[in-house]
Image 1 (cartoon, one colour):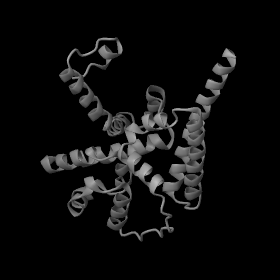
Image 2 (image 1 turned 45 degrees about the vertical axis):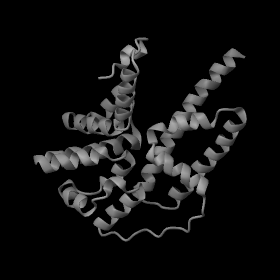
Image 3 (image 1 turned 90 degrees about the vertical axis):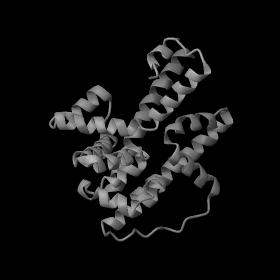
Amino acid sequence: MIDLTAIAGGIIPETLEELTASARELLAFAARQTQTLAVIVAAAKRHNPAGWADWAADELGLGGSYLHHLRAVGDMLLDVRAIGGSVALQHYKLLFSLAYNKLVPLTRVPATEMGNFVRVNPTLARMSRDQVRAAVAEWLHEQPAARAVQLNLPGIDAMISFLDEHEDAAENVFSAAAASAERAQSCLRLGFGLIGGAAEYYLAHPDADSLAALQQLKAGVLTSLDAIDQAIKEHQEKL
């Protein structure tokens, strides 16, 4: 097992084989850390039904719609596992291996129906998030929402597709993109545009999913504002 505490303390693996094994283990865990956290949150809720949200806020710093999405995903995984037997365990492992952004729409499928849903959708692991949403809507006999005509935006589409598939690498990608003052300004303009476009979409679709997304957006913006305010104060003190 990788010893993160040792590495943080300056004790580095001495061989390339050990370095490779440590990196692979770390990447494998990072790719599933949100699912793991979701199961922990849902299990904690079952231990402490009345105070689980306060526990999550006090112990983990989690709250808002992100916490409730985590809880929903965790509940789904635990409910599937609780069905019992080797088949249910296989379904649990399959779901757990999916990207987190695919698991959120899957929470709408009842756990008792998940086995049949998986059998009807054998390519679930290779489906995109939108394909998973469409499959869930079809399973629930919902009419597909009318989609606006999409512009052909190859650069933006490629970036979004990449980040959907490599969600855990997003922060490093954005840091690399803003590697100079000029590029940082470009990233700011692009970021404001993307946030404005997303907010406009959600505001135009007044449903539960849009409300949750807007709440998550608000929480993220407020968190970023706190960090920016702190950074401004620190910079001002140094001037």
